[in-house]
Image (cartoon, rainbow, N blue to C red; front, side, top):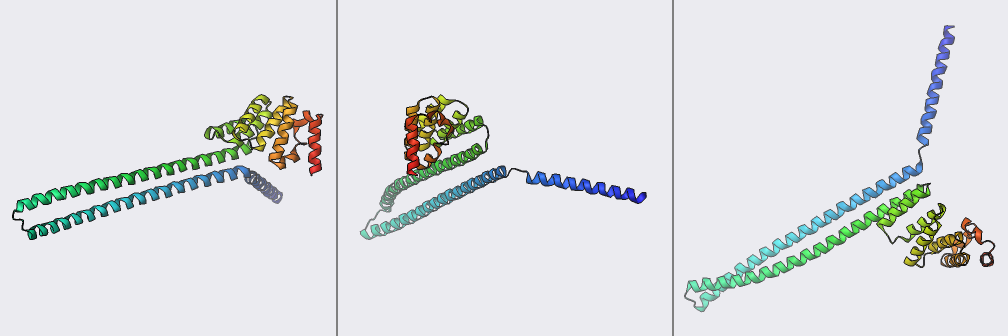
Length: 282
């Protein structure tokens, strides 16, 4: 009886350990791989951005140090040249028979002052030129940093939009992208598609019109406007936009018959003619 009790306890412990191990395995391998990928991508973008900032700061510091070295070298050479000029002028005056030492000093002083004034003005002009160039380069670097930051932010927002299931959440993300770059035609088009899914048909139509005004060669904008027009029973306009979209991007012709928003066009003779023409081309 005692041995049977011990055996029963061992079986219970082994079963508990096995269940715990199975729960742990599920917890580890159940994590969404896509979320992990997004976090790794964001971390990589931040690291690249920090490395770029460090590199730019280092280059600016080196440029400023080189400018200071050149300025000091220029000043030293100028001072040495002035002393050489003074010595040569004094020797020349003695040879020419100038008898008054005061006249020599006064003449040298005036000559030196004029020379220093000329050199100072020239040096100031060069420094101003260097400062202007450094200011322009700094502005270019700052603008590039802002563009890189905006690009990274937009990239992360697109990744978030791809993970969202709710159309309302997608629309909010597209709005954030458009706040950063109001000229983003792709964001406008994808927002129009999301609006169609939540029955905001007229809003989607207006957004597609705005996208086409900004870029008349973007095929998806015509496609979304065709979807909205079909939903509003504007069949002729919809069929015309479908033809334009296919002309700009031949890959869309395979989606015409599969698009749910075109169901209202199936009985239209021009739509049937368009379908048949695409079938014959294939």
